[in-house]
Image (cartoon, rainbow, N blue to C red; front, side, top):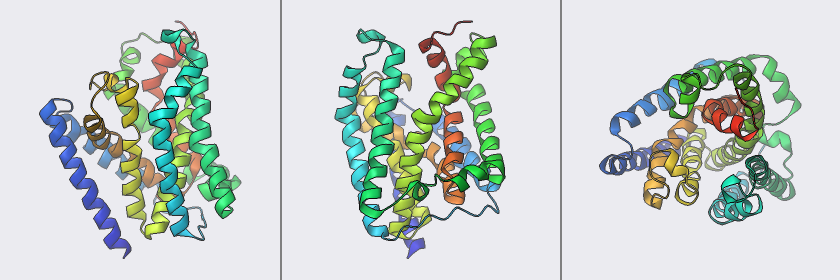
Length: 317
């Protein structure tokens, strides 16, 4: 039953992935060659590295007494997060405007991060705690998880984090200011440290708690298939990035234009973000250590966010 469910999930992903690449290639939004490189490096390369480094690691135990109900709750929370990204995020931006809208960049960053923590962490945690009695350990956050950062879990996290930083440095478009020496010295090292600390919360805790600790784990338990949980999480992880591309200009950064169509944004997120979610999902599946995947995710976004963050906090060379 589990293998069949997992295989069906794989078939669904392959079908959606191929359809997305055909659409994007026809529009010139993502050439097949570039998509193939991303799939080879992120989808297969880093996933293999994650699998290799976690051989022999015993996953932390997470008890889910009512898998079907917790899985249903996770799906409803995904819908709620989707509604926030489409409607609520606009309200948050209005309360904490950036410099282009009469506010300050640092205040905007802190306000958006606080809202993400509330929506992606606090509300899901309280929901599952009140409904099912789940504590922090039910999401992979415990003293045992932190203690294991000093052992194999931590070594795996550091090696993967270092590898993804090297890849981003040489291949990431957003890391160009660093490669070209525009950010050096104290700005680079102090700015890098501050950016990393911010990302531990802004993307690490928020997204890993929600997508790996809650969505992947609950769907895997509900379908009795870790593979199905991994695949469905990757699709959801990708698709939740689509509203930002359509509504808030994130698509312009990816070369899709400031406000691409919803179908184009969805196709792009399946072709890129979903593929990038697999190696994080594999680390989670084989360790169930939330702090470990938080560190890796923060490192994954470090170089692409560093140029923006050092400007936001007022650091100069």
